[in-house]
Image 1 (cartoon, one colour):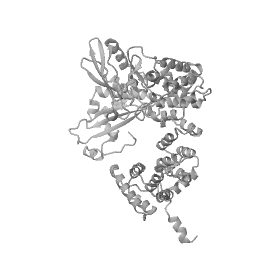
Image 2: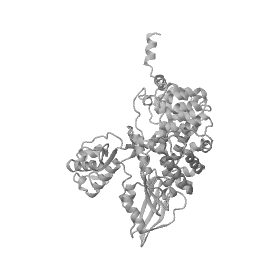
Image 3: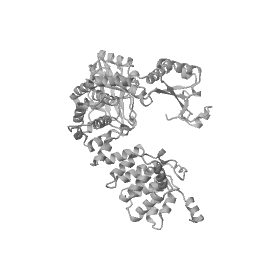
Image 4: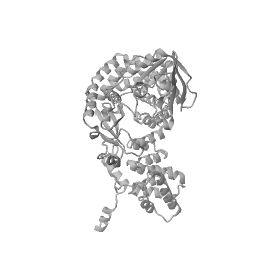
Length: 595
């Protein structure tokens, strides 16, 4: 090769496909490190508001389609000067619906194989989507390893007949959203390999509707009715049952699954034949709670008591109790706290006896997604939220119980018992009006965003109602240390506003999440009050490590430190702008973590 030709080859920009191929050679058995970043070429696209991105892209594609003289290189270079992403490409192509002509398909393949610009490659993937054939599979698999291209590559692969195994190969190496797309695409695939792969989807990928789609597509009820059910299938069935009761993706789906009741019965009947592990014990515990106070209760009806008793008998067997005792002493902190949680749950009383009962439910402390602690209201032994609202969990105990909202007075008041997963402003909630009428407490005028008849008016004996409410308000046994710290600090702030007020601050929220088991978080605002909407304001946040510290002592130390030292000097600025900080005489600091 001449010096000139060699230099030309070296100066040629590396295509994104070549970049993916080189990285894959170094990492042949798994995803690319950091999904292939940094990508060759570098540089960030200019910011353009989402409302304007599609118009520029649509104009460019119309021009290209209408002018045969424009080449793939022309389209590539013009894409480099626009701002858009894969979602914009999908939306624009749906509106334009260009016919898959040989010229467009050749252009698509050229952009994918030679593109040095991410946006140009994404346009190529969009143009090829729905028209790709077997010869495109290797290219789609390789370019899909790069994070910017994983979703459109998965979508294109999913539409190629006979590409099931290739789609699985790519889905195992891409980000969660693209993998979920592949799971949805293969949920009804009859290929045994596809069915086994889809059933193996981890719980953190399963929204309620995806879990139902998998259960239906894989004919889960029929599989579980076979004479022999292995441990893996049983585990997968339990995971899918739990996922169908969640409100991820906005509503529970267990009531819409035709075989739910039969599947619960068969799954519970097989539970005693499984080897005892902490993970399985947690699964049994969560399903038992769902049957008692969650979305599964209305689905199985009168069968629930017997199913719960059978699950508890399994967990009470010697192999399970010995395993849990060992787990609670484990050096693995997650295993230890899960085992301790299961033991604690098993010691709780069963179904509430009174007409009105409050059951605080703490999910598995090795959480999937964003589980919430719920204050589930039981009326005549049936969970009212699960029976009347399917779009979100019950409110937390701090919001519903500790706040005094459920206390009945002569003045009627409306109380929200549950909020939609996506917030009330989007999909509503479940509300009831509570009023005291002589010796009775009345719940009436129900208001729900879930279709169907609202619950009927309910009357409770006032003395029994007050007694149960007082018990629930004073019961903090459900808390874990970080949640206790959060409650104690919040109580002190309410009792003495001067703790923060002396620094011209006001309290925000204070809580602890299961995802950060040993951490409590609190927020506060400065200034304590503002005169107008436009007035500068900052929000601050503190993260409190609760590990191996008595909650009462830790909360007292935190309050004392805030009395003596301005908390604005140590807390992170998590809300507000640099301009607001300057107007308030403070130096702006970016937060070091997500809030």
